[in-house]
Length: 465
Image (cartoon, rainbow, N blue to C red; front, side):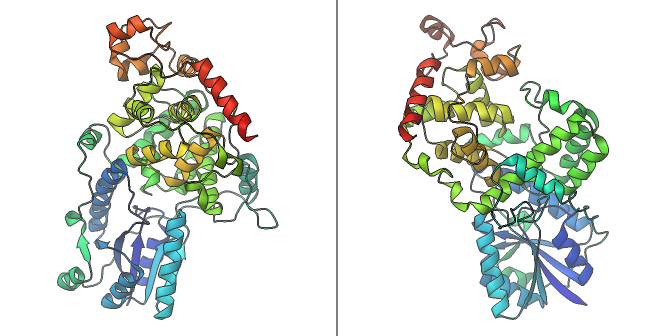
């Protein structure tokens, strides 16, 4: 019987896992999670989630008689050595979704090819293969609507694959595996030692079962009104499935298929459009890998930012003086999550009110979000800052006061996360406080007045036009 070495990155599931399906169909399988810079998230909140996700996957593998290990320092050479050690005649994995992971793919392929080891690289946790929406000349479609139409023209995503009933593991010598830098999941220390992450477990259970429970609840109870509620802040109107999608615990193809079964009306259509935005972000980061750190529109390279460490710190701590912004930033710090509408509001205030570079906000999100996904995060920040693909015009500057009134009309979200303002009337809950109120409430006045911020931002934009 043949033996396959299966590599895992952001695909920590058994259901609809193309690489696992191929490996199981061939015979015995040893599965390893790749511990390297291209795979392990740098941020504390996401690493906390990863720790729980791996333990959950390990339990799922054990239940199906499979074996999961972590390959420490997973260089191409170590992967090749491990394949030789277990007598694997093929190495299988789902391809990467980030530039770093795709570079890693190339390096692994080169190493295996030079040593005449077969390899199969299957599609990542996307809806469509790379290039599916490209123009006839091979250029990527830069506008979301055109991208979505091109994908739809090719038909629905492929049907998801059922989970294997059993995962046969080869007979393994634990001593040899340890010498090959593989360790058991229970011995893998990835959970960050940050005091603030201790609160995350009060809000999340990063397991496969919990992800499926969340998906079931959303599809049965909330998708029908999603077009009306997705921007609500309290209660949160978004699906809240993004952390499980980020780590591939939920298959996006399975979620797509289940959403079609659940709702084909406006709610379902809008939700699937949101899934397509995730798809667009993923394809665009691959097409424009420099966008992780540089604006896609070159003219923004000369934008006159007014970076400020004290200002940035006030933003991170939820002390800008704009109630909806401060509520969202404190929500993020406490739970590792923030609704999408709130992400747009706080990003707009950082980049347009405060003129602090979008890359600083993007890095903060990558460190504090449990669903810190590089493609989504990069696209979201460039979109709000006005320097990305299909971005909001730079002169679209959110008014945090009216945004708060519209999406948190009773002030419940603000009162939950900014208790200093809990006794304010609904009519003024989103208004900045006066200097006198600031002293009595212990809450700051705005870091900059909205009109002044708007005028300054437009002046800065004129400088690069």
